Every structure is written in structure tokens, then in C-alpha cells.
Image 1 (cartoon, rainbow, N blue to C red):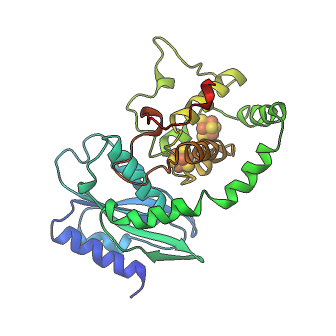
Image 2: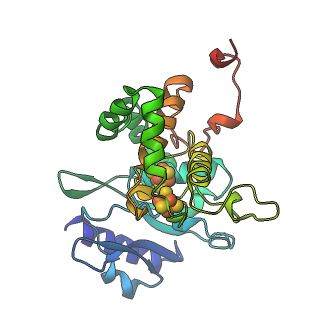
Length: 276
Ligand code: SF4
Ligand code: SF4
């Protein structure tokens, strides 16, 4: 049995047994290579589930809408390792109870979707530890290195050009599992903290504020990059913050549900070079 059939059967069993009230998975999209999130509530519907190498979106973002888990019932969700890391962060930040999340885990390797053993986030700890040891994504690292080699002025010009394209659509925020605030600071207009017009200053404010809010929290799922209609390489910015968190504080976002937020905790042995 292929992974798709296996997971359809698993989903049907979970729903039939009452172990979960909902399965969040992937269905056919608008083109053959696209997949879209679907929400399955009965075993009769599991034939709509698709699982292949085109299932790249991080579906953990659908776990946090207000009220979904407030009845104490469980939800099953298809997740790659980046999504499992997101669940850990959401648990660490008290946005969900990981006991209510049944993970239908998979990874994509050599153009194929492969099953990951485990059902609860804590069962994936060895996998996440191995990802931490492997370091941050190498394809991103190459482009990040190119930016690092620039002078500060050249880098500023690079980001100024990128941010000048931003139309403040907030698609990057909407797709991100870590951007769960009920009311984002940029939507507050009394007082208005961040200019909503899409001009250079306002665009810098928005994108830099978001990058800082994601410091040590981004799981590199790439959702923001894919959602951005003007192709701003947002993951590069968040990758830089992830690298800082890893190199300086040994913090790999979402490694476990007990992990303390890197910018909200203090250790006696934390480096303090910034105040020297
Ligand atoms: S910032 Fe982008 S890459 Fe990072 S978790 Fe959010 S959507 Fe994913
Ligand atoms: S998705 Fe792109 S264009 Fe839209 S707000 Fe984010 S950075 Fe700006």
C-alpha cells in the first residue's frame, strides 16, 4: 500500500473511532501540481485526501483559529518536519495542547512523500534533534552567504529594493503559523504604530518588525516566500535570525514543546557581547 492509501486508511480509522473530530490534509488544487488544504470530518470523505511531493504547505497554521481545540477534542493533521516544529512552538507559547494534535507525519525525499513514524509531537524528538545537527537549510545558506559578503550599505540597498516592492497585502502574515495574534500590531490604528501605506519607510517598518517577531520562531517552511505576490525573499531575512539564534544561543526553533522562547528567557551563561 502506498503512503497515500495508508494515510487515508489511518485518517478513516481515526475519524471512525472518534479519536479525532477532524483531519486537516491536502486535496487536489487548481492545477495538477498544486495542493490545497482540505478539512475532513467523516471517514466517507477520506478519498479526497492527496499525499505526494506537491504537499508542501505547512498546515499547522490551521490548528490555531480560535475555538478549534477549545472543546478538548483532538484533530489530526498532515505535517512535514517544519510543521511538527511549528506545533512544538505553538505548544510552548500556550496556543495549543499538543496532546490534542495527532500528527500524520511525512517528509519529502527524492521527489516522493515518505511516512514518518510517530503520532504525537514529542515522538519526533530524535528526528528534530538530527535536523538541528544537520544545520540550517543549505540552499538558503548559499544566498544568505552572498548577502553576508556585502557591505552594510550594499545590503541595505538590497533590502530597500526588495521592500520597495511590498504592497502590504499581509499574505506573508496570514500564511505563517507563527503569526497567530488575533490583532496584529499593523492593524491597530488608534494609535497607529506602523504606517499602513506601502512606501519605503512603512515597508521597512513592517518587514523588520515581522522579522524580529519571528526571531528564533521561524521554522523555514517557506510559506511566506510562496505567498508573497511580489517575490520578496522573506525566508532569507528569517533565516538570518534563525542562524543568530542557533549560533549564539544554541536555539533551534521548535525542537521541543518545552523549549523556552529565545528572546523571552535568560541564562546565566548567555553571551552578552552586545553590551561590552
Ligand atoms: S516566517 Fe515564513 S518560513 Fe518562517 S515559519 Fe513563517 S511562513 Fe514559514
Ligand atoms: S506578502 Fe509580500 S507584498 Fe504582501 S505584505 Fe508580505 S512582504 Fe509585502
